Image (tube, rainbow, N blue to C red; front, side, top):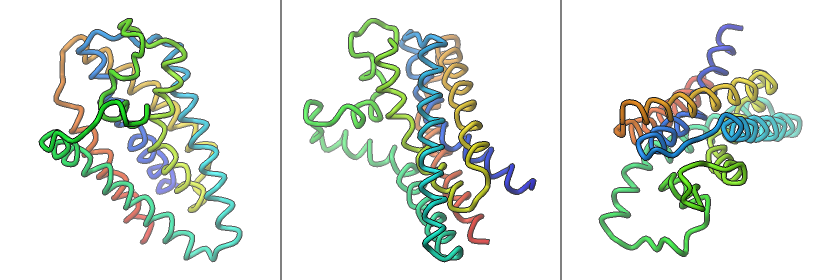
Length: 206
């Protein structure tokens, strides 16, 4: 029971550490996220986690339990490695100067630069912009929900925890970024999120 609870909390944190980096990026630039916009973003993460959890749970009905567990663990580890190496890949792209801002899709641009979500440059994230930002930030939640469904640790609780962490981390980090200008957390949050996902996947193999 405690192991499942710890895994749920770890998934909740790992799924939302990008929110901390984004919140601080907004805070230091004085971009405001209202509680309603934050709630919409959290709701999208909750829905993404729940739906991907159902997918993961459904897969286990047609695939042997051991194979499903290994599949879920491998997916989490691979995504964790991808997230962990994102800052390095981002620096490499900047050095090569080959990234075309206009050719990338909206989600990719937001993940690279959270300020892209403020389409009208109003210094406030509107409700429409919150939906787009929520979709971008929910990508990690998809992986966490899928993993929860595969190992049957409680889709409802996992999605609820992910939603709560999303709301708290984004709001708190935006405040801290605005108040203390702690810009350095962005890449650190990405490293920690990737490492947590890797550890979650490894833990499941045992």
